[in-house]
Length: 264
Figure 1 (spheres, one colour):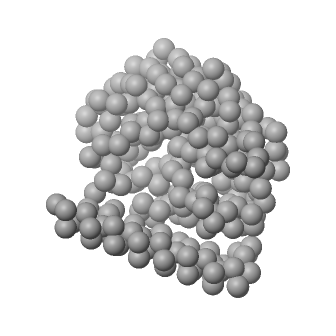
Figure 2: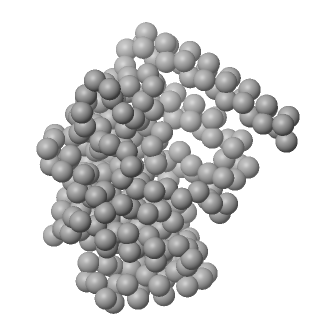
């Protein structure tokens, strides 16, 4: 079995998926499988993916019978994984050649960790660096924003992913929900950024009007969900402090959005 399963979910990505696949195949770390799960594309996405699978036995292509949506399809992809670790690489992103090497090395160095996330630079420590789940919670609210990371920023122990139940399936904030949940029970490894290139384009949900309008509220919902959880590692005084910080930041976001509307 491979050490790491690279999971690529796709929907109507015929213009981008070839480049995404080739970026995985260019990895300097070669002990991987690439699992591509198509979510009922209406274009040539599957045809292109199958063309690569025919040339490289490490690639498997699966086609959903019905459209599952973003995070449910990520769970479906994980169900096919046979590796010790899972690493998501979206069909519109580019994974740099050193990405898997850095991520796997970090996880192997700290086998007690549940996952690793690309983190903001720490001027007092070198990476990779292990922090407890409680420290990860605190750092998230104190400037690092660990749990705001996209799936491409992470590598996850497959057994941990399964134990905590994978992604919730909730729209837009399923990744943040998962990071909060894993960190309640497992340490986090902080690793360097610059391991992949996240493409921005109009067909992404994060660029929609719905996302711009709802994301702050959804993010607050996730925070309160885990503040209320019996296994939340934070004290009540810490929760109260961080609530105030979040409210202050949300007000600044609203002011910024209003200012942008005025300029337009």
